[in-house]
Length: 130
Image (cartoon, rainbow, N blue to C red; front, side, top):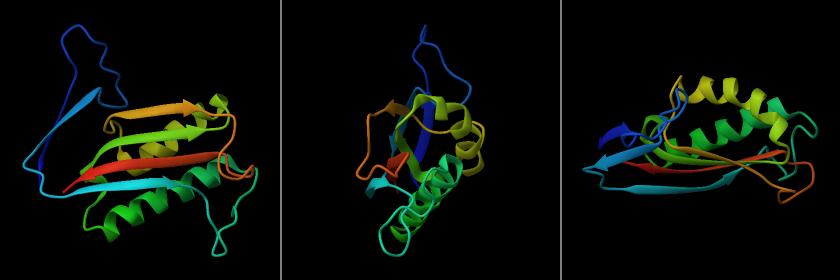
């Protein structure tokens, strides 16, 4: 497993819930995970209108993709999350914590007008180092 060292530059705010930066040493494999959404078996949205269910499903899909690539959520070095309404931020934090714990790797949350289908409320992509 590579050595992952979270840090924040001197004088830069270090938030309690995610790392500002992460140094990766001795990685041999990188996984680039496309945006994961709340797909059902047919490729449609499984939980239209239910942000919390969609967030759980997208994070579970992200976890499954990383595990299929030979890693775990502990290998994640960067997460980008897209939401269709920034008011979902308050609901997303605790759900994200269920998967990553109290302090996750560097994370960017972006509000967007829409995702691939209007039913999707959240999409999550990541990079992992193994």
